[in-house]
Image 1: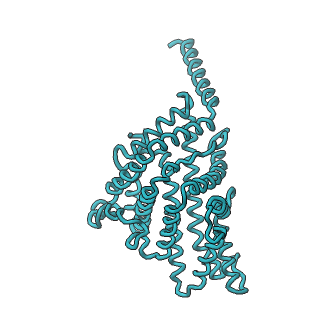
Image 2 (image 1 turned 45 degrees about the vertical axis):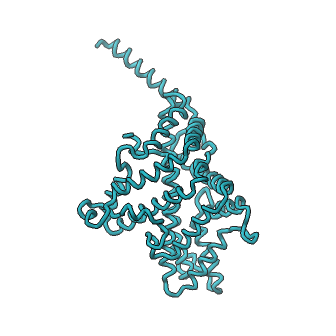
Image 3 (image 1 turned 180 degrees about the vertical axis):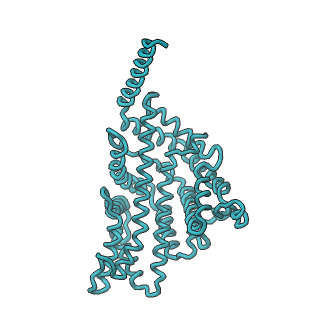
Length: 377
């Protein structure tokens, strides 16, 4: 090859790279993300029940593939144990993973009743209020990950189609809590088995969430609009999902830290110890410590949830505010009055349950991030 031919090839490659860079720079990531989310929302609304059915069937099949069904199999396969028949019971039933935590079961039963009884329009209002706070939280993270990030578009209500399928949604939440409670239990005793089981759950069988994966791929093309914009859109989506994971991990750490915040107030330990003037001061300090755990650099989650409940729930009991303060106040008083130590043990288990509940809600949205299972579909 002559030197002139080499120069021509280099010029061609240089121009090709420049065209790719210019094409990517011409991609409006905010508009692409908006089109992608609108596509996803449209596909979900058309046949929400079939997506929910796939979620249930494939989650349970994954559990049967990745978990051992009994202790003998667990020892031979080096897997954690979870019988598929366990999933037929709700995670908050008397014989579920919360069987030793009456506080958890009471909280869970109340939360489920609230989900079932709250009208669809009020649930939608709450989701919209919380979504705005999540968008603020995510935008700060995304600006660090995506160069020249154009901002987050309005987030559509992806769960709206599930308003008529509340029992099915609750089933999926219960399955998630069963699986992850058992993984946590296993990890404390056999971390290698838990790691192996968790890795299996990422892509347990060929065709896992295939319907979800097909919609993700088709909406990628619609959102990007041109072939050159597919990669920038996927990069932005990957960053969004990474930010979801970071926000989830941060919130879980904060929730897990609430038990210590309560103990600090009850014991009067630490630099922010409770004042010693009466039990009321301890209760106030306990409530204050918990709420402090829920403040991030961009959001005050206690206030956000308070505002969402008070703005969206129309029929408030006895015309009272549905404030988090009153709920925390009752909880703190019960813990302070307990002299056996059982309340603090149960409250720790209770917040572990709350973490799994939060996780299950996040995962219902995060399933649209795809994963290694979509690469083989």
